[in-house]
Length: 283
Image (cartoon, rainbow, N blue to C red):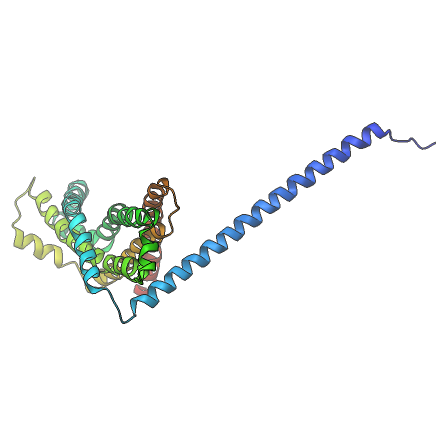
């Protein structure tokens, strides 16, 4: 005879099945919302980029505000970049000298430091410092304007905030950050000369002759091109995070913090891509 399953055993199984169904549906809804939020944010980023490009080539370009932002970027970061540039060259020289001395290649030290600074260390470290200094400043400034409804007031008064606030800052970052990187490279090479003269005696003209004899145009051009992209990334991220900040005062700190984190991460990603492209073109 067939055994009849008691109803007491069936009911708990039904409850478990319902719980599993609810959990699966909740997970599906959560994943759908995450995908929807990602696509929405991605579309917002593309729209923000399109507006920047559109307002950049508009007739009413805010040239005075652009010059003011260039001065602000250079004035805020120049002392920090100066100290960082000298320390980069000094530390790199002191750390590399014992290794080269083992092989009797002390004469190659100026060229090695110069190539390292110009191709990789100078652009990346300077861009990371600018991401922390400039990116956070843009995020906090625009975020505070968003919280205090100054951006809405500009729109009401027939002033284009995208053209006046965002485009000028992004273009100023694109222009000034490559110049700051070149300045840091020059001070880094000077710092290397100081490092060599700690345990030696090399004149400045001889040092620069040895350093620049190993530098070619192939070393300089890719570094300068990727520094332009560094400036574009830092300016865009800082303006985007600040311009789209929330309504509360807490959102100002969040915008500044996220601008630094995301800007630094994108700088490293752009550097990896640039290195791969440069390697393919050289080969």
